[in-house]
Length: 273
Image (cartoon, rainbow, N blue to C red; front, side, top):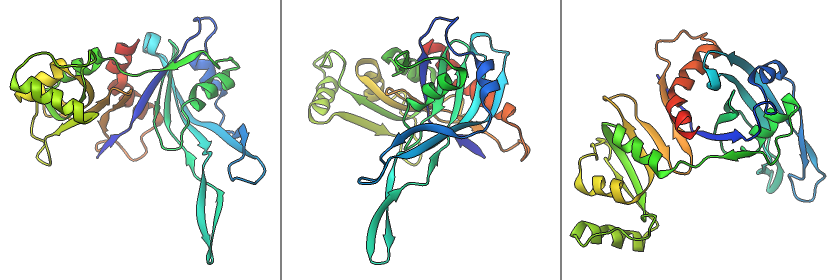
């Protein structure tokens, strides 16, 4: 079976001798819950302690500046939920947790699964807390530049979904019927999406799509190479790799899974470096 995950990326922006070290992070992750913060989750009630921990860490030292510590970050959500109590509806603290995969790299970059209810700042702050490094105000999150989006389009044999917005200079140049149509679209709607439908027809080579990829702002793409897995990329900074576990034993360890996902993320990471 194939697996997917929505990854976002960031970087702890500190000098090399000051930023957290993956090996130190690996040693410090001990599967113990600690208080992350206190928050009023249900209006009118007292603040509650919200906890977090790292779990199942794996250290890889064979990738130079991209050597990494891989782990699961587990944390209470800050959400409440409405439940039924007989005929009454009451609000209570959500008992759900987030549990994203996280990579932290030697060069300060990190990659994490984007999950509903996960506050992105929890990830770098947890890395800093466990390694006793003050990272507050010293990290950034990535959006993907248009050069990266265009490279994804150009390097894929098959494009099944293409979303575009207005060109960055405000207008698509040219007086052809195609140029006029694209400009009219972006006047009326914030973005326009083409899809190959259930048959996943290849949009690459379709004139309006190729021209839009060249001239318009690319916001989202689904694409594959050599009839392989279809990966997704969004200009907002989301990359969705796909990998196969169908030939893996049921008890495969964190090392194999981490190295496989890292290989899928590698080219994206290097373009952001």
